[in-house]
Image (cartoon, rainbow, N blue to C red; front, top):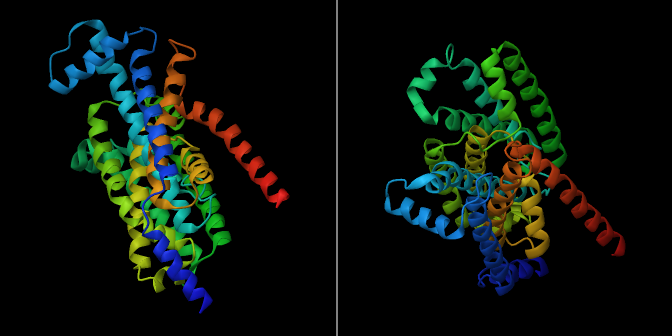
Length: 363
């Protein structure tokens, strides 16, 4: 009876409004994101004044013709990169939060369990085989060839890992991580074979793509991102209560009236779609899906009603900051943003781990 009473108390707590502290944190991160957005549009080898940035944004919204060099730099060079960084960063961070919630493990990053590798393998296959075996696929899907293929790769790996890591309806974390390691090895080997048979131009494209970059994205790719990232982001808050329930186990979630298996499938599909689209357009960008949800969970707690929107905004701000550093640090050179994220994310994650170790020792 005591456990049943606790469940009802928990259920009543879930109906409460989002705490004010969480809302304030989200507002602060949104303001930070807006500041970074304006800074990203004004900074670079050709500095642009704040007033000109605002004027260019108004021209872009109204559909006016490009007026001068500064307007062209903002609208044609920096605005697409900034929008891509926001969409991809938000998608990767929320996909990480969802994956960690489903598998109840803060290390269940899409990259660690092989989802990103599956998307990368499918994208590399399209790049290398687009003139031979997969020519029909490119003709059929057009500009969506890479995002759809990457989504299919990410989704296939998600289902395989979920199948291997689930025994008698219960997710076994050790099996899940081991399956992820095996998938990473297999997809890495297949990607290596495709790299071996690629020609010089394909090899050069794959090398830069594998390090992660937002330099080659244009509005056609951004339109695909809007479909593949924005729609799941808008739909996922509906499943925040299911993710909260899954924290107490699948059996408890079922007793609370959730359709666990159907919900987990929808969540995995949404995460795979966002990761696949991001990998297809910008290449391999790690650590966002691992670090951002972990950081937000330390600040706000495990409630996914706050964790999902906070991760979305923080992920967008972090990738926008990384891209700003990538193209201004050694300007006019453009460092791959994936390398910058690794430089930022690695030490941050180690600091978080050290704080947790200290906390455990003190308790």
